[in-house]
Image 1 (cartoon, rainbow, N blue to C red):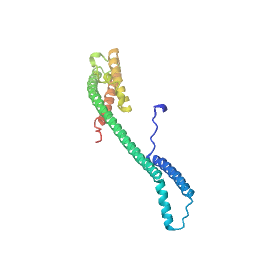
Image 2 (image 1 turned 180 degrees about the vertical axis):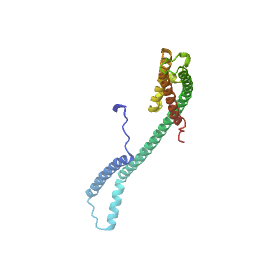
Image 3 (image 1 turned 60 degrees about the vertical axis):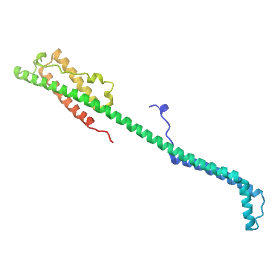
Image 4 (image 1 turned 120 degrees about the horizontal axis):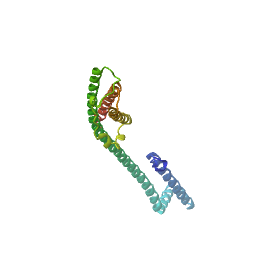
Length: 232
């Protein structure tokens, strides 16, 4: 993903709180300065406690609308801050749930692919084992491993449509397993071509043994994916 497509990270609730708190304190300080200036401009002579009380109440009555507005504005800021924090928390929960859903969907697709490939690779392994028996029988009869393998002395390893039908999806499997699957199918195609073009019994035997070994290895790896149940 390029830098242009990256979304900016959300600010942490604590940072938002500090910003709103600084704004509220600035407004409070400004209000205090205005209110203090108003008091000093009245030139009241505070000679007695009763005079003090009357003067303060008089000032409060005169400035009550202004003070109510200031406190209301601060309360509104605090409420907005709490609402923003709550909204961000809900958004985070939604993103986490969406991530979990996509992960579960990917795992389900991986299990389905793994089961399909495992079934076909087991069939390939069975065909290869049959070929190995035929080649070993030919070796016993001819007693020369450099003799060419005749098509009648082996059978084509049948490859169904699982691989070709899922070439666009195989990349959803773990990279290491994907590489092993591709190599195994390539080995099968290579052997099928060799038995037609002509190959020594020795080379054919080595190729078949490699196919059997690789198919068994991949099937074991695929079993781990199939048995990996999603977390509930």
